[in-house]
Length: 341
Image (cartoon, rainbow, N blue to C red; front, top):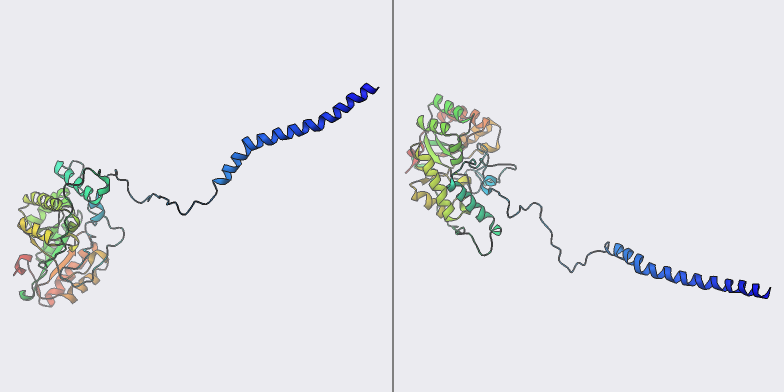
């Protein structure tokens, strides 16, 4: 009996000591395996240290390797191109580009190697960060802020004015413009974009065949003041080659009316006279043919150069009103070359 009691006593003493050991083991396992995970889980929710700079990626910034044609972003849709910047002749305030304006399409995939070279050089100028540091662009844009005024009208010409159209040819519109001009026996000058001429050569040829004056509006409607001398030279060279089949041109109008001496001197080296304007009804920004016609008639002056655009139904509808209004005021519409001093 005494021996049995001793055994029971030993067992009672065993249980408290074993529970202590088990608790210690469980606590140790918790510290080793469970607590660190929970600690890092909560640690990830802590606020970042503001003293450490955080680099963010601008999702609107194209990758350096992306193939982007900058000129296509710059160039307005034919017939809707705002001639922004300082008005060369100046009857309107400088205007910002309307939102959503797109440019004339760049050359088709079958462009020759020279086209690809020009596009690549322009891309390099606009995205210098895409080039390796050890391989900079061959020609950097030259800053040429000097701006000698270009011919934008002749007040000594008497009651004579010239009508000009930019951004053509435009299919579906150019033929209608020509029809209205022919019906009223009114001369005009068409400043055409090279890429448009290349895409629609029959329309360009029709303008030439009907005896209207031709002018260059650059090859891609690029803002040439932002380009390097090499790119500017190439633009004029390609335009000269393209217009040669049409009998050549003698006038050049800088896209957006934006120019400097580098641009105009290059034009002169190709035998071109740079032309501005001094009557701008902003027809690219109006769907009201009466408003367009009234602006021209109320702002007309001796020797004025009137700026209009192809591809606009409101401009097309305004033409007869402009012609009749000018005639009533005693103005004669003449070819642009007759206004030259």
